[in-house]
Length: 229
Image 1 (tube, rainbow, N blue to C red):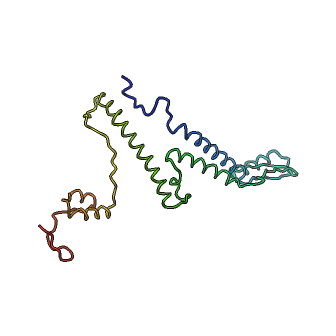
Image 2 (cartoon, helix red, strand yellow):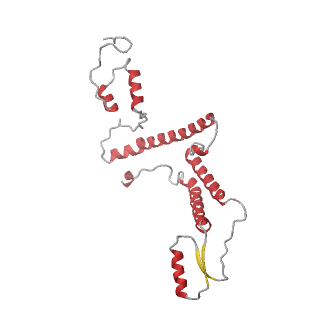
Image 3 (cartoon, rainbow, N blue to C red):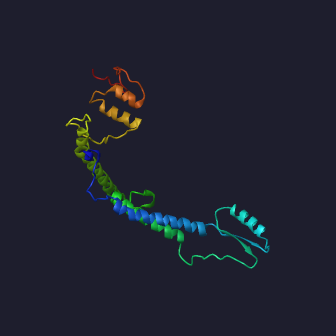
């Protein structure tokens, strides 16, 4: 059964985020291309050589010299000839391209995260409360994606793997590891707070902090207190 080797996600004709993001992504690609072309034609000054020689060999030599100078446009002109470049009459070309790209980035962020204010913190402003709400929206979207992926793995992938002969019991369940990765200082602080109430696995703590721990000391603790036996 070839269907065992496929993992369907979504509906048969569902394109997911693709059909929403593709227009904005293509428009951004087009905007970046036009911006690059604008910089190539206008951003780098046009170069010209004026000569009153009618010698073709000399013209070719000047052409090679100009071409080796870089990527900007260039020309070899006779005296009295000139090249004129059209200038932008009004407006700020940089702002025109930049604002268009910012709008497209914002649209794509809204499609994926449900909001765009936390996608680029350096350029966004707002109160702490409003930013916290937007962050929660993003986290809710992320949590929903995790739950969806977990359901697909448990309800679709695992049953197919069992049929294909993989050793998975009916009780095997996939779960996301959401444990926090703590730094050494934070880890030691947690251990210190839990030690009075629980027996701590010293071997596990040793692996985490990189210091080998042995039997717990029974002498007087700082402040004169004596640990109870």
